[in-house]
Length: 367
Image (cartoon, rainbow, N blue to C red):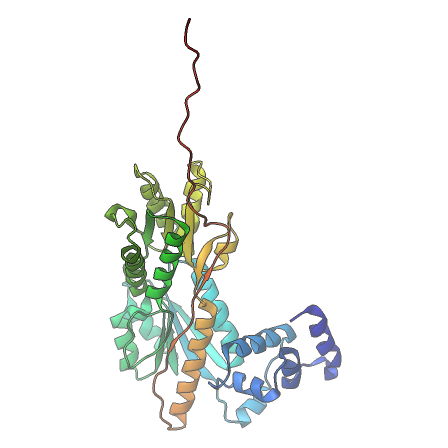
């Protein structure tokens, strides 16, 4: 979508107010497709939904509320309970959540809750807003207490990035195990045999699944499986600093470090620079998530792209479909969706540098 096409559509708009037809024209789809996206229908490709969302934002399109009410499209009240140590992850998630909420006539209620700290109190306060459903990102997606509280309230929930979601809730996730295995295999293919791994926070099931994927690749390819190469992190930049310092202080330090998220990978790059190591010449560093942070540091991170904003959008759409089905007394089984991941190569990975043996200067024999 370029500037020229946006200006052309704006010039053709009647009285300067965009319509659904204008959105369709800019997105290159039919007005019926725009309507399906706006109403959370499932038979639309993710790439098409993204085009429609971009067109809506570019034209600042607002659906006609009276028309939507006449069509029986009562606003849906959705609660978002969050607790995540990564600001980059949360920012990506909120972008997808807010964009899709605007498209689907969703009223969003947000509540912060530190995992393990008054979870029930915060969950109940959110539910008291008269919600139709709840979206739970990590780590609260794995909280039994929170899920029980939502279930007792009799409202549907969609969990995002949950390792083993219960059949009673909707879920959106990627295969964390396979994604981490894929990245570790990539590093081994580059020639790395000693690969450090920084584990994510133990309160998230994704942390264990990524560790398992890393270990599986190491075992498959016969790379170094020393315990000293696996260090605990907490998904925070600070924890990444501590973990990287521990790995790079080893007598036989790793030639590559794979961190469980971009925050910890960025911290690893910072420690390497402080120690005078070139990235990727002396040390390859890779991350996970592909948040905005991955392209704001130097060198830019090679990482696993988890479609965080796309997962948030899918969570809203799945919840909207279920709530509308329940309102119409139709079958409303929870949807559990797996989305694709992608390995994105940038400038932070390379084959390990093979240094020639040190050569002492020749000394002429005394005569």
